[in-house]
Length: 103
Image (cartoon, rainbow, N blue to C red; front, side):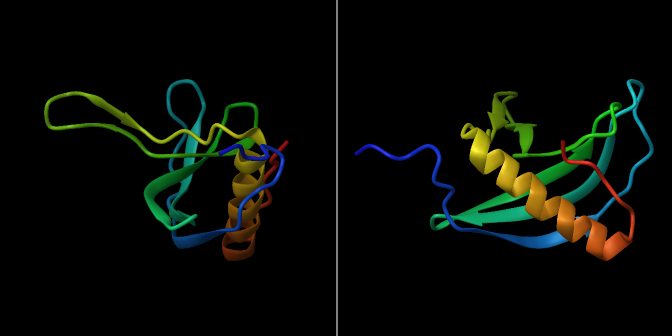
């Protein structure tokens, strides 16, 4: 089965929790945590971060299993990553009133 990488599937943002952490040592901040529902999957623990450059991006969860194995969800399709970032950024701005830049 082939897919069109430019067609962004329908998705929904759920359970958006505003964090607004202080910047870490390199200046990046965690702004929010959310769940992403897409194509019958619920991806829990996604994040919206603001880099030290002031640009926000959405990422899948990153962590480790109880055995120390890496666990990561990566939004490999750039169009999907941009669409998720934009939608979460718009929700963040609507809830907080703080403007952010997604590009």
